[in-house]
Amino acid sequence: MTGRGQVSAGDLLELVRSGRATTRGALQQVTGLSRATVGQRLDRLFRAGWLREGAGGPVDSPLGGRPSITLEFDDEHAVVLAADLDTRHARAAVLSLTGEILAEHSGILVIEDGPETVLGELGRWFAELLEKAGHAADEVCGIGLAVPGPVDSETGRVVQPPIMPGWDGYDITGRLARAFTEHTGAPRVPVLVDNDANLMAYGEQRTGYPDCSAFVLVKVSTGIGAGVVVDGSLFRGIDGGAGDIGHIRVGADALCRCGSYGCLAAVASGGAVARRLAEAGVRAASGSDVRDLLAAGHPEALGLAREAGRQVGDVLATVVTLLNPGVLMIAGDLAGTAFVTGVRELLYQRALPRSTAHLEVVTSRLGERAGLVGAGALVVEYLYAPERVEERLAALGV
Ligand SMILES: [Zn+2]
Figure (cartoon, rainbow, N blue to C red):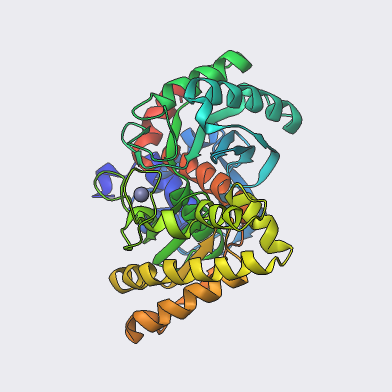
């Protein structure tokens, strides 16, 4: 909001959604707009079905006089679709606009089969999920997708992804939008794509740590990646490469899937631990196999997970020194007690006390749903951002 003349319906919606002003009186007070102007702009939001009167009844007005009716975002006028792709399986859901999961499916979907096949299949999953949730396809306002690779968020394309062969530069948003319409017959909707660790961080920060102004999540599964949320927004860097810590060289001689030697992911990821277990004669082919072994208390898996935690903790000491986060969340297949113990050992040993004095090292709250929740939230924040509301209201004819 730059001045009275520029306060739009989108700005008023933002004030209501954030809880900063939830009555007509409060909106007048915060924006300096007249009662009539606030009324006109709110009227458009009511006609679009985006606002409703709160169930709580009237509250005292900040301007005095009669108590006013509270306003709230109507989260039932649309739904969001989200999917989270891992290398060998995927998870998809229908979510409400406030992030509640209304229907969910997980199953095998192999990223190496390529984007055409994988995204086509996701379109089918979405159609089935909408039916399960009892929502029509034309209620869908957008789709969010988490992928295990670096994403250029301007184009939604992945850039040289080490564990997504065949996806480099592919038009993911176009293909997924088409798959959705092919399987549901509904009109195209916007598709947003982001890195999985980014979206997990976004989902966890918003739901569990909304007041934390510097939040870091590290995902350790087949690969290793980190998501950074600063002041409530994802920090992606200028090319979407921020947080891609899996390919920091740690000096070992193991060959990484990116083609280099000695990357952190080549020695301390779920995939790396699985390889070492297999060499020792234990049946393990992937990060999720390691997760199962850890859950069963397998001694060799626990020892290797702790050692992997120490290697990741060494790199995280630098991350924590650079960003001084309030919360460092460890997520993914390896994120159990053994791994986190290893992380703590090296982190507190290597980072300056000032960087860790108020640091909480925690494990995931949302678990395997974090990426879905983050993807859904990203779509909602995009579509209801003040700068996009005007255009969307116009398209609805209100
Ligand atoms: Zn690498």
